[in-house]
Image 1 (cartoon, one colour):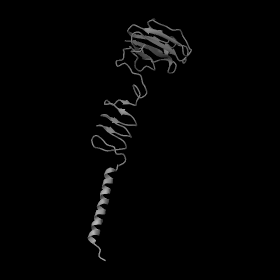
Image 2 (spheres, helix red, strand yellow):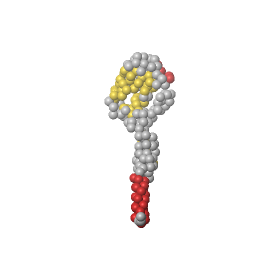
Image 3 (cartoon, rainbow, N blue to C red):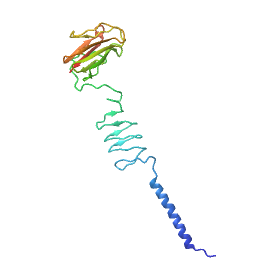
Image 4 (cartoon, rainbow, N blue to C red):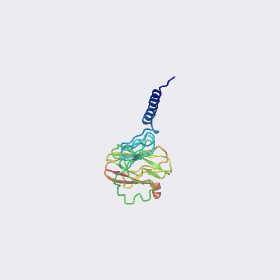
Amino acid sequence: MTIDTRFNRRRFVQATGAAVMATVLAGCSGDDGGGETTDDGETTGDGETTDDGETTGDGETTDDGETTGDGETTDDDGGDTDGSDGGSDGESEYLEAEPAYDGWFDDVDNYERTVDATGSDRVTVRVGAGSGLSFGPAAVAVSAGTTVVWEWTGEGGGHNVSAESGAFESETIEEAGHTFDHTFEEAGIHEYVCTPHQAVGMKGAVVVQ
């Protein structure tokens, strides 16, 4: 029997070529653990995409900046946000320019800056905040015509609210939930104290703008 070796060789070459092509195509269509792309042609990490910046962590993106941690983004100025309004833990906004209190808050433990509550019709200040011997917030800015409501927490003993100018004064109360209010019309800094605890720094201020 005569075997056509040329025919068998041709079939072997064709079969080998097909196998090689299938391998090449599989390599082109496969992924390297994520198929992530960058605008600059770089592929790194699972599900990560960058837009002219650096990205690390699953599903994180950046917009001209760096992002780290799940779901967090950074603005162009580096300010961190995590989906909450006004900051990662809902912190209050403050006045851009702090009023000159001339040492009024030097002995007040919980004073940091003046909370900006301008534009609100009513603002609540806690009486007996913190350890029970503070107003919270210690300093708040409001618009003219705003009513400030002081609400007792029941902590720290008996407290009152007494304006340094004599414009308003509440009775001394220990009971939680008691309220006292005053509507501010005149622009300026209105300082007040808890008379029984003024010596330990229980003082506050309302800035009317």
